Image (cartoon, rainbow, N blue to C red):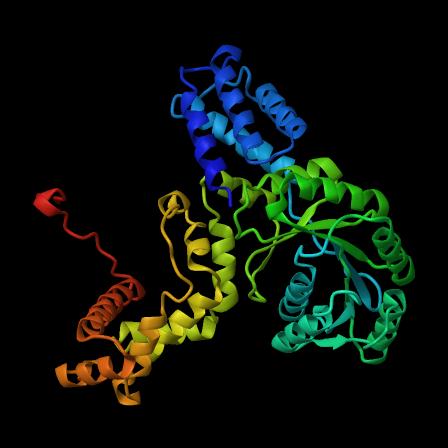
Length: 443
């Protein structure tokens, strides 16, 4: 999302030269480039101007340590100010009342229904809540069916009133149903329009007055840039929502909405969403997003995703197998499945410092493991359990069964052997530095 902005900010920091002190003279060109980079990323002009003025105020006169260059000092200042601009710290969702009611609002096509499903999945799996989805969009023909499909995928019940055209009544009845069936969270998905209009605003205002939600979330498509910010402002004037959700962050967006929206509407960004998978929803952390914008990665989020997928007991069992050199293709495929659950591979790699820039023009398809899975699936249970029995004849059979070539199977076997050796070394705590070519490393 922020690739172009990241590149331009990096270039702006390189302009800053000089040692010992940041002055108004040597900072002028850098600030100009930072402001230009923000505006190019579709950040509101007033926000960009105010931001650079604040950076200038913080930077002027700061002593630069001998070990730190002025450009590095400026990077730190910009990082801190970016985080503050986007809210400073993560804002939690309020779940008050019995049941807690969450009202979802936004324009048509912004991703409200998909977000409703994702939020239900998150509250169910991470907070242990009993969630009910209420289908309050009575205008879009496929909205109710879409919510039913999403509910089925995540195991959450969906309350509907087929044929009813009264979303206020549907929402009220949905809450009564939740109380009767011990649901402690109700998520009300509402209708959107192609543009902000009076009828839409009156309807969503009436729903809010009727259900008295503990949380009202405004869902906005990040790809609409400053239009998203303007729409959020109009909604907030009428609805006084509690937080913003940015969707479609995996699309062709410059990221200006994420940076501007908090400053313009004075409401926190609470969630960011990308992709169609039900687990592709994250709590918005301003500090982590600032790090990603400046190409520093987001290792904390990467670790959190890994912790969600990896079971400690399974990890202990795996370590024992690794030490005894018993790691096999069943374990190998299990690790692949866990990695896939963590999300898009390019997105995951982008959380590592410096990797986002390296992978800028690299396409990592979602089915990158497809061939590996096909080859392993073509092995017999005995072959998966004891890879050492896979001889040339068996490899030929596996290649035919998986629709691949002998070269593909041989390549996977080599990768597996290398992985097993490396993992055994790490698990055993014997990690040694490899010898460098040409005798570069000497004792």
